[in-house]
Image 1 (cartoon, rainbow, N blue to C red):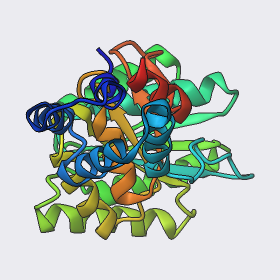
Image 2: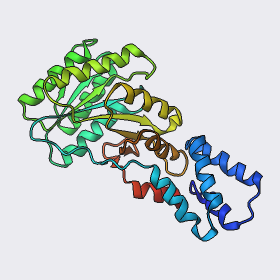
Image 3: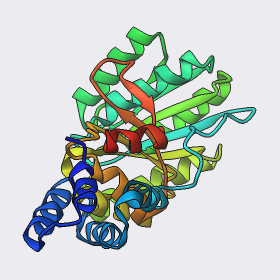
Image 4: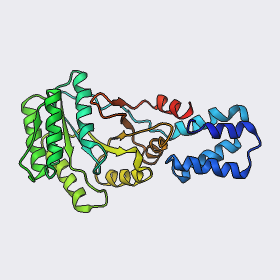
Length: 278
């Protein structure tokens, strides 16, 4: 059943008990919409006439979505650095490779930088993706300074006339001040050579409302331009997409729907809303 089917049915029936409303409320909260948004939505539903229920609810949830551009920013003449940030376990390294493939398919010259220098597995994974996609990967010595690696990668990308440099940064807990300071240092050293085009926060949809806390912390310390949501399920935990855009005002740019390199889709808000309704 779609995320909002029971809500529509409740309005259309015209005889929903308070106990049934509470059950609907609980189900919507379980979908990771968050308590405040659920209560707003139920208030709209209760005020709607049966024939107007679906359009009223669709208008409400549509108003929560970001109005900012969802496309990855078109490349300028010259280098366009893109940082991928987030906590460990969100699929950040794989997402970096998927975006590289997407850009390459759109005829851009791409380079990768393995700035997660303290995790050998992440460096090896990115190198493996680079070999499969025939995309150059800049790596440093194990445990080297991530900012220094980012600086060298930016320099190399500019010298090679690369369109997009995708930098896979270390996973960092949003509550760890020293790690967030390290991210700010990476940003500063890149921008000494080239303005950063995008800073994309990779979020695992299954982390639920904790994703909102992650987003707020990263936004406070870095100029996040958008999100990539992995493991997004429109019928089960799909409410997190609505919640994160409502809270931040920033757009989801891509969604990950599988492990293969082609399993990355530009986020289409219209398709997403339809997936919640049907």
